[in-house]
Image (cartoon, rainbow, N blue to C red):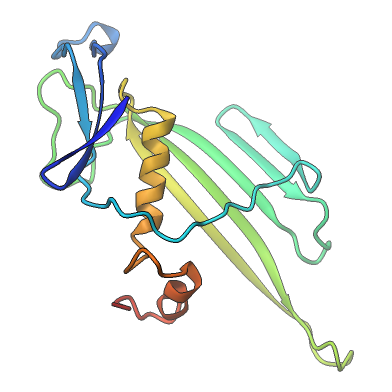
Length: 190
């Protein structure tokens, strides 16, 4: 797979043949190119993922299409959970104005959810009689995508990078510098 720029948009191409699923009518391509339609190309400040170490997280649910892990090193008063869920999507075009599948194009797709829920605690180190405050906090990402041969882990990783890049006004900006005004409703820091 190689990455090129087409009119300011990034395109990924591979020499593969696309064949319709389940014997449906559809187009066959000798060499297909997936244009992601994004003009983003500059690398932003590095974001280092904080991975869910198996020493700290244990499986609490492992069903087809969904798994959950809980942090065993967190205090009982501060649960922390990770949830991953996968589901089939009957029509990825649903709810997208002005974009409809062409005849024979498979509208089916998939959805992948990654969710982190935590409980944050605020307390006074100097005064043990002061009240302890708890706040629920969550962050999640949902990827909805077509069941199509050009959709690979690499393509989806680039999508996640572009989505995170939407937070940045400039390549050298630190994520915390962008989020400080954004969490207060200031969405145009630049």
